[in-house]
Image: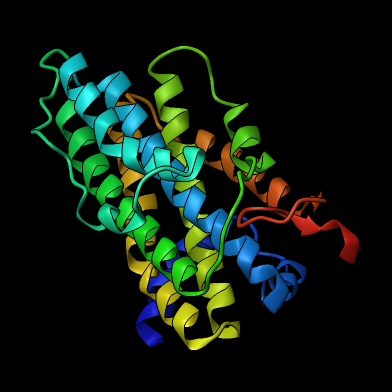
Length: 255
């Protein structure tokens, strides 16, 4: 656990607030763990989709973009249409090499980091699904939480600032995920405890990759934007929230 604590130091410094204890108290209740697993599964898919959309919009031609879309289609079919065999997702992989745009200086760096991230998020998706199947957990469509939507509502509307802001938002989302995995793992059964602790290293790297890309793409210092989104994120995490999800705020009923 000492290595994990070292890993979490920069994440705790990056985030403006820690997860409220009230959220942890609710999350550790056995009756709420099904909802968390379902939301976690969908969050992994959304994280992969976010990375894929960034590559498609900013870094590749249409043919490579179509290959990325095809890569994610079986996962989307499973979640949103209840189609396909979840076991086949274990061996699903990108079908072709992704070719970078030659006229965008950061294309290859964006592709390299985001393709690795997508692979890891889809592997995590499969792992969550495997746990759910072992526990006979079924799921219906789960709507998005306010968290990511409200974060992204502050993104600027002109490039490259739009991309820079999206990367910073994604860094906070990944960092918060990592912090929450660490917060709830000690309160869960051995299977979930081991699983959530196993995610810490990749999630910690994901937030760093997003920040590194934002710094690479910007020709200006981005400290003020990082601080700004940190304050937005902290307000969302501590604000009373009637919904309960992996990135929800302070449980309203516990006020």
